[in-house]
Image (cartoon, rainbow, N blue to C red; front, side):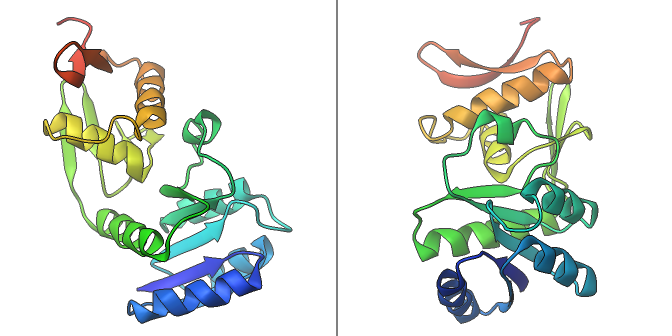
Length: 199
């Protein structure tokens, strides 16, 4: 896998470049937003892993450009993922918050790439989730974590509802914006379930 790894902290970049290369990846590095854009336009990457705080170019502009190129993006967050980020239509495929272990980043990288290379589509009532495109109902982008929540609910699988709290809220907000009848609700003695307002 060809990865573009970008962060202004050069020591971090060199360390994680070595870790990603040990997993069999080919890694190119960048240290500011302008370098990310330049390298992403001059070469083709399977995935971009970059800091949420890049100098010279706003992260939103970088992610928007990479979205248009259909290149999966993992944002390394200096703070916790919040609702403003999750409800932005210009959205990275996945987020990971500092501090994290190297294994967490490599597993997430592999997971995001696997999803983006697939063509799985799943549906429930009036919603459809295009996993490979990271799209809900072909209109709103969703994250890796939101996909995991929706997939678990559609397939009646277990998931960690405590860690998934922000993503449950953001999915409901997106379904509301789409004027869908389906919502995620907590059902007594059953936990979180997908329900429709005509049930």
